Image (cartoon, rainbow, N blue to C red; front, side):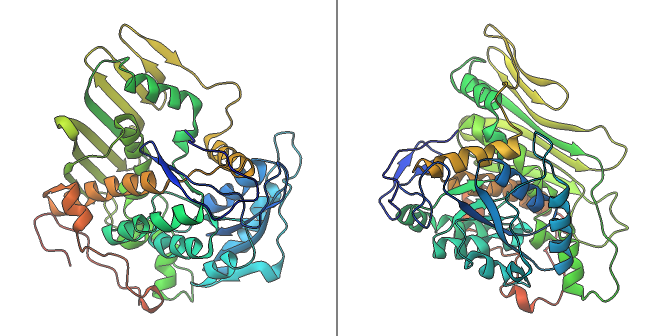
Length: 432
């Protein structure tokens, strides 16, 4: 759903205007003035795990003459694994992946390695670390005027969200493109479904149901010689400030879909959850959540997410209207019922969603257009944080209360963090 405006191919710092409710159309091309269709785009990767490695594959496959030239991770072994994995990827015509032009002197490690990548002369940075680091990384990329792919979510606490929202004026002024990792928004028949619902094909929306119920999630044993912080960085999914808990890290995809359909965010949340099956692990996160969100006009959404082996899995969104329903659920496809019934299927020219988002973004940059997903990235992330905090506390929490909250999970100085984590939250009790 790119919303763009054309501009001169050599323009970089220009005015910006707001378009719609979820995108900012600025006036920019690439950092070094490239604008022709096949001029080189140099990308850097920050966070070399599975998601970051796949993001490189998707970006260099999205268009001709896109190349990876710099990489960063806390652990050197992650960079080495990523490079080996990239060597195994094939293009659609079964050829080795091109554009992997990485040399040892452009592989950086440590907590500040993201700065070395961003300072290395790249045009476009892929930010794929655990989300607790994302506010620092986005701030630095904006400071340096680099186009950004930011995986979801963009923060794990309200202060992180506010830091990124406060960057919007500078992002607009510099004409920086920011692509959010909400790849569902780049699926053509999902775009069609959203438009039909917003055009009234199921009547007025009465309720929504959002699910991300899956099986178990990985947990890694401690490697001999690891410090406590290194161990938790390795197991980031299980620490509140690093991953945000699975409602924030994973279910955020479907919470964003719901916001997309509603063209707004919830006004309050009332949730519950717990840690029933992962008690034998370290960490301080839950394994299940149920949250009732309320959107403007009193429209309610039931939201569930779970990570428990041996349970029935269900992901997606189901919407009930006054004249029909919209189903977008795993294993059931995308379908509208009622007087304007329709089955919506993937279109022939649709690429995988993770690749399509980079195709859309890079095409826009090369045409001298810009898309900025900052606000939708922040609103989707905050929707998940709102639900998590309601479940953690057992309290009804409004959007405005959460936006003003002084809650800060992320350490003020990450480099000085000693690896200590908070106790598992207990509703009705003061957080440790």
